[in-house]
Every structure is written in structure tokens, then in C-alpha cells.
Length: 178
Image 1: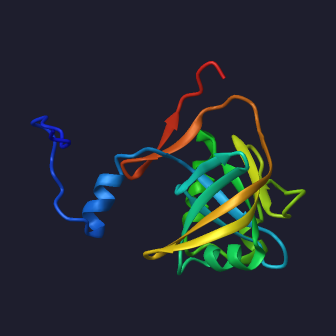
Image 2 (image 1 turned 180 degrees about the vertical axis):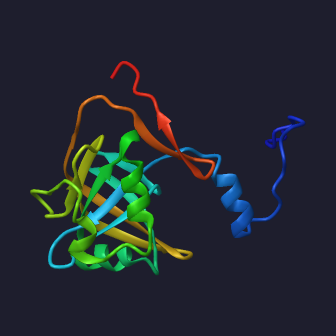
């Protein structure tokens, strides 16, 4: 049985080189989060490689590049926060994705946030949802680490549209019947 679509508009992208793979994966819509660590050296980073792993025990995973400041921050802190962004928070997603932003506490100046009660990590106000996590496992895979973490605490705000990343751009996910 042929598993490749036979639709005449489908285009094959041969190989698994970074550029073609990025083009293919851009067609997979993802939510947008800001990962954050607290303590003496707080740090934040936009991430869309984030998902739930298990409900029992409650756990999630995120993938972070080895050369990202966040990689060292999560490894050192062992705990982190996750703010799931709403459609009106595209500016936050862009800011925390900008490698030229200030580091440390200065990157959170001017934004409304609350320190997580379990992690001290900045949790961004107005987010769709938030989680506080404790690192349990880390696996190297290529140029990233897969961080698996136990959820220590979680919550969500009221109904609002979500922020998605699809085909290289931010998109609005409509909240229906929330």
C-alpha cells in the first residue's frame, strides 16, 4: 500500500536535510509558549516544541537547542515555567524569540508577570494557560535536548483565542465554545 499521497498537487521533498525538513514541518501547526526559569538568572525563550507526555504522572516535554541560553538555564535550575500564549500575545512571542533581547531579569522588564509559586519562574500575565515543571529526564537528540518534566502546578485563564505558528507565521486559533 502506498503511504505517499497521490494528489497531483502534493510535492515530494526528497531527503531529510534541514531546509526541506523545515519546509515540511512548517505545515504542522503548533501552539506557542514561553519557557522561563527564575532564580538569580531568570531567562525566557519562545518555544513551539512543547507537548504533553502523560496524565499519570502529569508530565510534559520541550525541546531546546544545545546552544540556546535556555538549555543551560533549564539544566542548572532543574525547574521551569511555561506560559501558553494567546493570540494577543504575538509581541511576547517575537520578543522572547529575539536573540538580541537583554538577558537576565531585564528581559522581563515592562511585561506583567508573576513568579510561579513552585518554581519562581516568571509566568506571563494574560497567557491562555501556565504550568510549572520539574525536570525529570533529558535526552540528547541531534542538536537539541528533549527535556521531560513532571508538572508541579498548572492553571488556565478565561476563554480567548490561541496563538499558533503555521507556515512560518503566527496565526490565530479561534476559541469556540470555551
